[in-house]
Length: 173
Image (cartoon, rainbow, N blue to C red):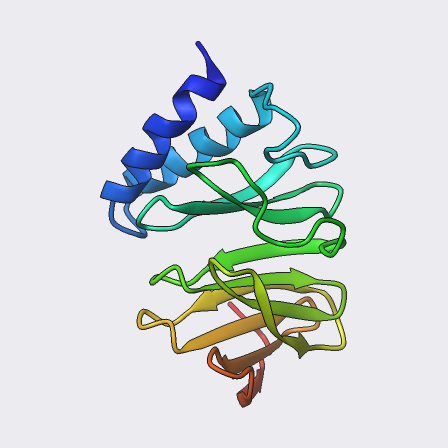
């Protein structure tokens, strides 16, 4: 079918489906696939390479994606306009949207960046000594956990980026 025509329907389906449900996972994969296949106007979602990760807010107002080339951004679903400044997001390894849609975390080089959304204002950089490949927000959106490929997990306050705790994960079974 028409990948571009499917995007609004998928955005609505994602808005109604609870976070973590198996059906939401299917919608998220389908959304990413439609995004990759869509021939969108220049004003919307241009990433070099393939979109390898995508998330949409629970209200369907905006989404974020990153490519296998490390580019990332967030876009308004209604207008297709990018939210974050062009060219500022290179080297992205992962991304996560907070449950309330007010924060976006992007794992990159040796840390992560935390953004206030939908304004796109950068709150802070969350430092690691290895690439951040895993991100998770608490249900209430007050905390974000970052996991780097050297087994270090850090927990941060999303209000100001203050580090709350740190763990080294050893011998996972």
